[in-house]
Length: 220
Image (cartoon, rainbow, N blue to C red; front, side, top):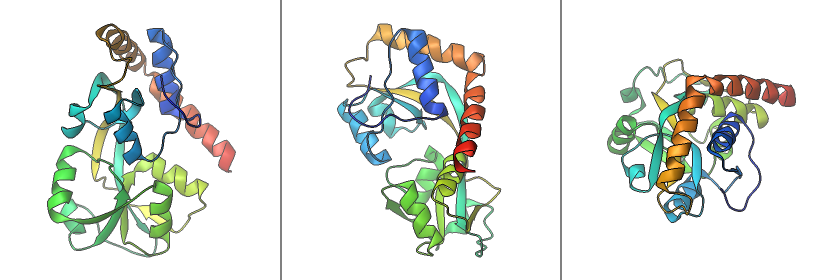
């Protein structure tokens, strides 16, 4: 239920494939570009599902959400380890140049605040954002906790850190494009039951622990 691209791995990929198995469909989890391109593919219906989208009002216009959320995630402020922004609340970022990944969301409340009060440039990928931060081309980067740690380790970026206080704590949902050929009431019902079953059995926690272990084995 996805188009061209390289196969993706990780806990979210395992979750969406397991949900498909329980719903009686085969799900191919592939890389289809940066987050902005993925969102456009969802608008166009050229990909069917995403495992890992925050709930925002604009996205409701082109995606159906499956409940309950399958994972919670914290969004963090990342900075160089020799720079102290003294960050503890959103207003501490006013007047400071930041980065994030294009078309990313960190929850409706923060997105609205940032749009009106903060100076945040967008980059195509997390890898590029972390590299720019490491080189001092921005004072902070906003991104989720675990992906930030994983990509920094993979890129061997060691001179950054995150603050303990999260920007936001949001839920991640499985979503389906409104324009997907797979988007029928019957299949949505089967997927909804599958998601509910997996969340009830806390399967995502097991998958995440296994993914972290596997990542550590590959990067140590």
